[in-house]
Length: 88
Image 1 (cartoon, rainbow, N blue to C red):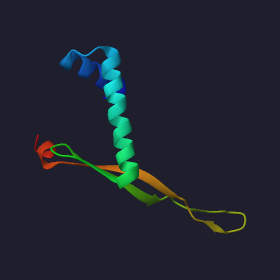
Image 2 (image 1 turned 30 degrees about the vertical axis):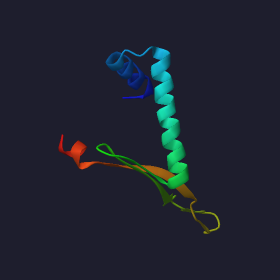
Image 3 (image 1 turned 90 degrees about the vertical axis):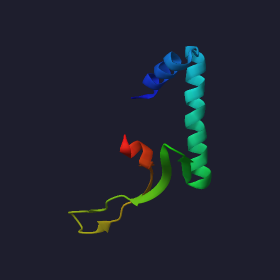
Image 4 (image 1 turned 135 degrees about the vertical axis):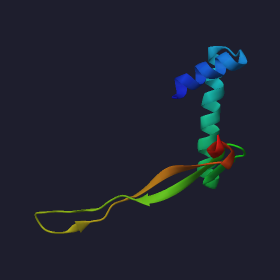
């Protein structure tokens, strides 16, 4: 399911207009992003937890000079589903 599918699903389930459903979905994701930036974690009880995580990008070795170049740190979002979702 992508964002436009989510808008259609929300519109059909709630009777909202397309514009209202798009606004709601956009606000939800903006709020989720702000929470991750501020706290590094967003918990939605009964659904799961989104956590901001740092991961090291793989480095590489230059075949011409043999020097190793380390990777950069990347921020990723990890999702841990609640046990209620895992059981379904």
